Figure (cartoon, helix red, strand yellow):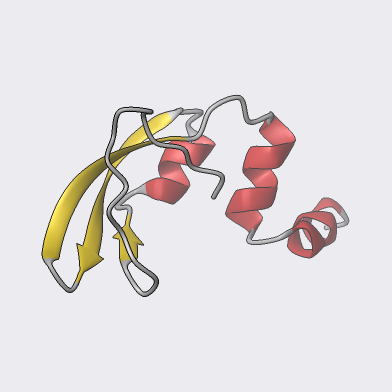
Length: 77
């Protein structure tokens, strides 16, 4: 996902940290542009607010299909 965070949000994460985003697929399909998530790291779990703005309808479908190849395959069904 092409996420961004607010400019004033500290970025204190390391390789291996994971982002858990409940309901992301439905949020993308519903046209939302912001979502709350959790960063899971060795230090624990922290809340983070993510933005995924200015996506076209096609870009949203590509993301929810999993990749561009799946998107094209679904267009031919």
